[in-house]
Image (cartoon, rainbow over all chains, first blue to last red; front, side):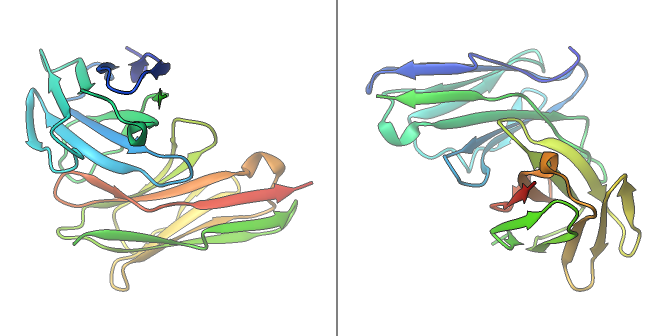
Length: 115
Length: 109
């Protein structure tokens, strides 16, 4: 696609429910990133994909968080048994292969509110 | 541990003023430094810097990198109210981008 597409744009869920956030990167981009941004805070790295592999999952806050990428394209971030502290904007970004450091392009984000 | 520090945290200026935003970093295997503008949700790309001393310029915005002293600055001249935003600095190490907490700029009419 023309840009990084994320869905849903807004999600309100009850504490304890599971949520899935979807990211469709720019066509041809092999690298995909998930970041989290809490209100008034900077971007917190969650996970990085190169193709379908995730060489670095170190940013995932707990085992309630998981992510996968299929076909080298779409990625899903799943949060199980959501907690109120999970409320944040979840930003996905993609870039072409990292050689000398490429620009990453962000989607509009998914605003998650856990009530 | 890799880190990126931005200063000031926030800044209020009047239209027409010039501002300088700072970004210092400690990153293993530095590859590039990026500046983004964030107004609502998605950060939008401004500049990518890889070499020291070469100024990147776009309209009233310019940026330069010092790889010896490990910092970059973003300058905005003749500020306008539309420049009000959070400006984010990100540094690429091995593969991931580490972001600073940003500088919140407010330009008053």
